[in-house]
Length: 77
Image (cartoon, rainbow, N blue to C red; front, side):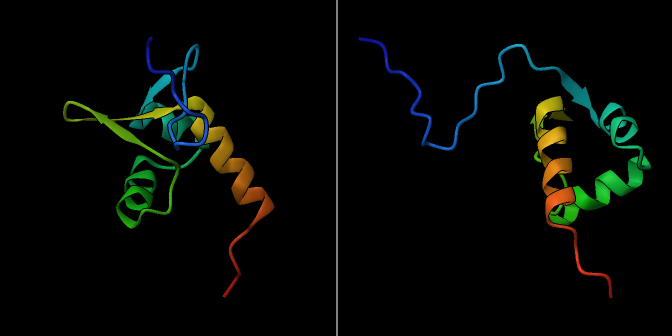
């Protein structure tokens, strides 16, 4: 019997999703590359991962992050 991923284990399948580079993700979000790097450093940006030395983003994660930002905007100081 082959082990099947448990939907509750925090692992998300990305079949059919598009993997984007940092530059492509920044363009998609319409922010400068440096802003996306800074958000990644702070841990406040969209979920990312590395392939070798290269940072990558799933397009779906960018959309989910934008949706979350729209539903829970940060307080203006």
